[in-house]
Length: 160
Image (cartoon, rainbow, N blue to C red; front, side):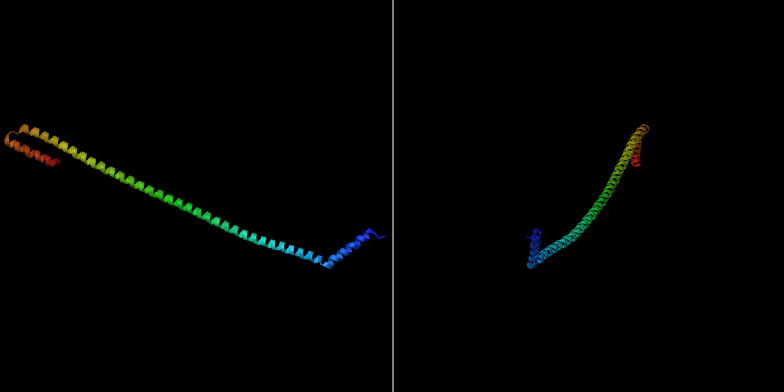
């Protein structure tokens, strides 16, 4: 009888021969080649997408750096503007204080002048009254009255 191992070997050889005859190895090979080319295409696409993503990332990083630099410039400009406004305000306040001080000094000067004038006027009036009293006591008559009037007029013009 036939040995089972021999039957299996003959069946296997027929199976392999049939596979070769029908070209199954070519179909398997072409299927594997197709799959390899698909994988290769996917890898190429992944590489292309990665390159694009890196370029896009670099672009966004550049935009971010530009935006940061622009923000820093805006902040620096705002600081400079604030300092300028503060110095202008300080100058205005100093000018205002100076102007107010000058006005106060002018008012004080006017008040001093007015007070001195009032004191002189009061002194002149007192001197006139004193002179009038003295002269009235010493002089009598028409000549004395004329002399007193003339003296009072002279004193008024002299002290004013």
